[in-house]
Each structure stands twice: as structure tokens, then as C-alpha cells.
Image (cartoon, rainbow, N blue to C red; front, top):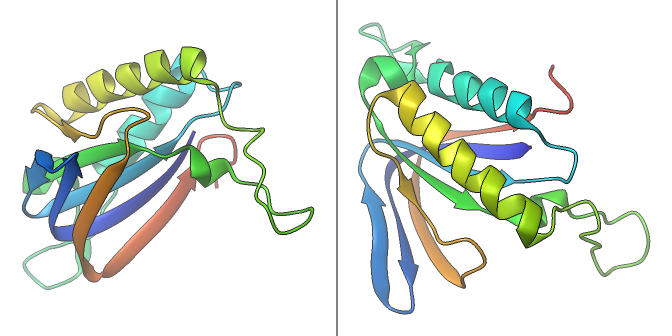
Length: 150
């Protein structure tokens, strides 16, 4: 699983003119899923994101996590995170999981993330044409890949 985590002052997801998720301070997570991803990837990535210390403490140092700040979260599926641009100019998405694999893993990630945070999490709709708005705070943007745990 590959995630782009953006610390936000606010974010929202709109589908066909209807706002389906909206948050204030927290994170927007763009989530890409591969065929080789497992429940272990879900547990590791969800825990990592929920405990990632990217929020300021009382001294203005990024030392507090989403759990500690009780910040909000939205998770949006994004298969394009697994684009390969090695050959030619048209990206290949061969590494991205097909919907029959990706949808259950996406749903499992949402459930695990809710559990790790101890509260509800906003979400996009898998496969929908979504309009994602955000106000990146910092900006702080971090990329994490469960297949490359560095």
C-alpha cells in the first residue's frame, strides 16, 4: 500500500456535486493498493499514519500525532499512486490492484484506521470521479509505502 499523507487545515470530497466528506484540522490520505497488499500492510500502515508525529506541540515542534491531537481524517482511494512512467509518456497502472482485490482492502483499511483513531473517518467512494479539495497546512506531505518500510 502506498499512501500520500497531507496535513490539512481543511479538506473535502465531492462526488457528482454532493459533498460526501469534510474535515477541519487533520490529514487527507490518498491510498493506492497493489495486488500483493495484505492485512499486515493494512495494520502496519494504519498504525504508522495514526501515530505519525506531524502536528505541533506546545513549543511549535512537530511532535504530536493524529491520535494525540484528535484530528480528523479523510481517506481517498487513488490507483494512480502506483503509476509506472518507466516506458513512454503514458503511465501504466499494471501494479494497481483490480477492484475485486482493492475494494475489500480499502474497506478493511478504513475500518482499521477508524479503530486505530478511535473515531469515524471520512472517505471517498472507490472508483468514483471525485473532486478533492484541501488546504495543506505547512505544507506537510509525506509518502509511505508498506512494501518499502524505511
